[in-house]
Image 1 (cartoon, each protein chain N blue to C red):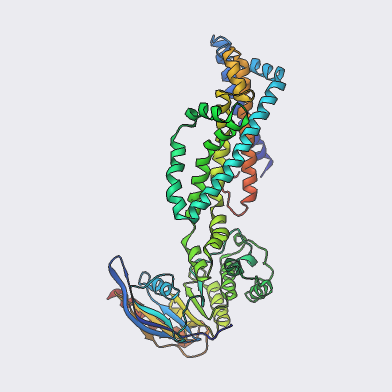
Image 2 (cartoon, each protein chain N blue to C red):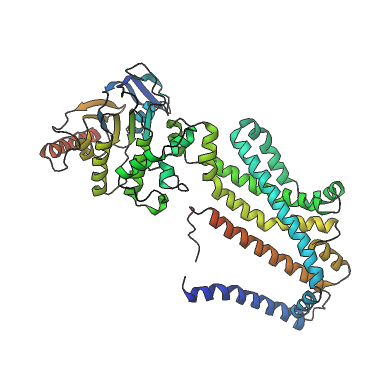
Length: 256
Length: 245
């Protein structure tokens, strides 16, 4: 990568951000919108600095819920996808259930989950797991089903046991698909956690946003939103880099 | 090789696809320890025939048997049109893939020796993506030999290679598969004439098997041998006539 391209890659998102901030600032200051509806970017930045302790605490809670939800959802989703591949019985019984779990809006379930699992982080972790379970399971299962048939024929002539074919051929062949599912899951897992916090919690960014909203502290709400967005982007980037390293054999043709 | 290679007998072998026969009533014996080449135009059912021998497809009529009355299961090594290397596994692990899939102990020394024989002794730890097409096909050949099966079935294994690399692979295969019962499929008359100790033509609809005369001399025959060139011309003519008919 040339130095010019590095600069371009760093500068491009900054230019986009600056443009958006300028637009925001213009509407807030010159558009005559009252600050309790749309605080200006500088007011939000000021609040973010003043309330940094509060925001950091809240972000820590949300991050913990997100990461726990991702970890558990990933393990559970991967295990279910493997079980559905290995056994037709599991596949026939579980597939409708997996689809059903996606058809029920998690947002509607949130109050129930808080009722069942309490105001602590457990209900939020369950929310995050429910949100990411489907993309993980369905992408991994798809990958496991699409092993090139020629590999399976070769394995058959070699006298392979089915479970060894699963471990040594199907599973690694499905990892790129699993990676795509995990990337999607990483981007949406915080949504599950925040929705849970919104419904009933005593800490976290969603909780902070909700209390700020009821007190018309719109600047604090915006600050929490920015922290959440930044956190999600960084988490996604980290997972993306980690996957690129683990899936070393997959050609990555869109990298600059 | 741990067992003597058997002859493979086709007995009234027939295969239909979607109701229409691909071939029917095939009777032939591929002699033991002999390199047989099966030549025919694309789509005539060569691969289906080979898959029936490998027990990958079930024929709709007749059967495939070994002349020693034992099952062919577990005695066949397969080499396909693509190298079928696992992209995440290093060269050495691709060669020993069969042992891993059977849960058998891995004979790394033997795998290394095979890779040295195909000229890849210095690329044991490379990933398939780091190799050229010819090198990948040589790894596939080493993997086939690692299986150490008395019967080796090859489905156009060199068709994706350039003509020079292909000629080198043919030399290597003729040398390393000596004394096994080999059935190799090809659509290349030159390949058939260089490698075939028995040459068969599969043509027509439904397809019939007909033996053709084999050029003189031991395999691999030189590509510029007059007998090979004459045989190649003869086969080409047969194929063209077959398609025209």
